Length: 147
Length: 111
Image (tube, rainbow over all chains, first blue to last red; front, side, top):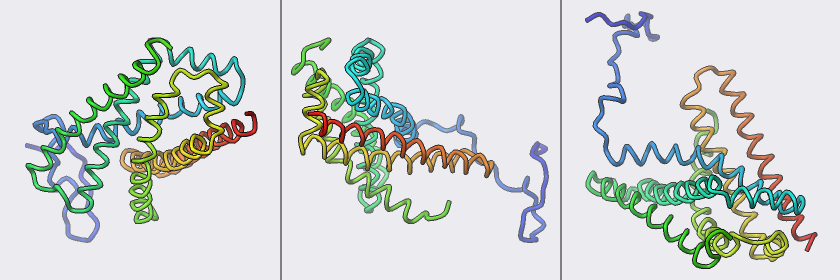
């Protein structure tokens, strides 16, 4: 089958063309693995939290700014949409932190075996869900819903 | 990207620092989620409240900036766009971090 990619010589004078290089399998043909999911989600939650942290800055700044600004931000955070964002943020930070700890452990050489990697990835998923529920239970139990 | 080793080490240093800082912050948030403005400012003006949030802001924004730099390096192929986005990324982290730190200092002056 003809390779559809444009032909251009590779540097180094080997005479090989760029089109001669092996093609990486496209993302869609991979079977999903749990470690692949945690890897992608680590980046996705990181990017999402960039946006969420703008809210944290707004919250702090509004408190310094004026009563009106603070009430507006608190009103938004207390709305269903604001709560949805905060809930997502809570899960994102739980996931990113637990998975990050997994990466720090892997950096030290621990838990690199396939079975351990898979087990730890599942633990990250379960742990982040449990942590999120615990945090929100804490908020509702100490403050009461809607405060 | 230049300075890759420093980037790697700082990313991990900030990650380690944030483990206790995030845990402290979560406990703080649970007890300050529904605060009035006066209550929040009063808490930010305490040494523990102010320092724990300020440290989280500094390490958090630095960590965020390093992380997004990686994302930019991975997905943006045009060198000029990449450089521009690195500037925007660093600028965003500095400005938001600065606003947050100012807000904490303000709380100390206000209360």
